[in-house]
View (cartoon, rainbow, N blue to C red):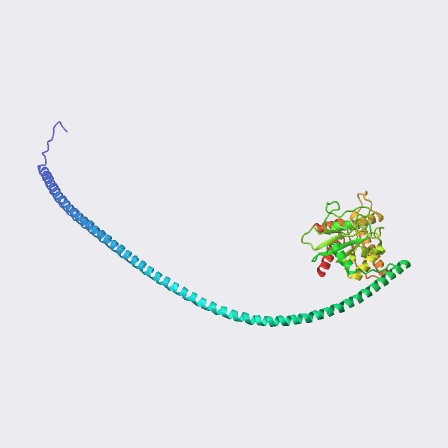
Length: 428
């Protein structure tokens, strides 16, 4: 614009023609490319169809080959089955023939063996008959010799019996004379106030063993002593029993045991049998006859129970036990009671709460042990008996030890049980 005048430019016809030629050329190239693509696509389709035909032909050939292979395999299986059946039939026929041959051979062997056994049995019968005849002849000869020896032996035995009867009559006469002399001596000693020593007869020995049911393999312990010394309570403690138990030995202020009473140990593995023996020194049991009348000579061991003092009865029991070779133990019972009495004597007052009870107990126990040991030793010396230990016992402590408990206070309970077991072992 400017000054109101317009300027008009001419089209660039050369450029337009060049553009039109380029477009025409592009269209021609695109058409040629399209035609080439169609030809390539047609060629590809033709190649694909050819490949498909080849593949189909290959598939048909493969299926045909598979069918032929299957037919041949089936034929081969049928042939193999036919051959297997024929082979089995041949094997069965061969096995049947072999079994038949073996059966015939077995029958022949059995028949031959039976004939051989019959021949051998006949030979044995003949030999047995010959041996029996020979043995019969030997037996007849031996029987004659035996009868001759028997007659000779009978004559010797009759002679020996006559001589034995004569010796027995002589011994009986001598024993009767000795018995008469013994009775006369015993009567003389009684008249003079001397207590005789009586030796039990074999009959008395056997009778007392039967009376106490003496059993092989067990250790028979007699608990003896004067009346009231605590024998029955000690028997109960040895057996682990309380005095009030139903199967315990009877106890009391007066002598409760009138006959020797047998108490097997409740422990089934124990070899001990305990016997509660009536107390000596009563009107029923005079002390000088105590040992023999109670049959103490048949026991394996004797426990002599003393209480406050050592008596002539205790001496008699120990002397006779030594004479018969029977182990004897001296036991002082009721130790806890005696120690309590001594505690009071040395000033212990149970009502005094501040008192030293343990100290008083130790002093009383030591005094009790010393006095008892000294007294027993003196009494044994006076009785001309060898010194031996005395066992101080508390029945409560002994019962506790036997039942597997540990009592608070002990004296000689464990030592006595140990020494008894050792004695039983030595005399087993």
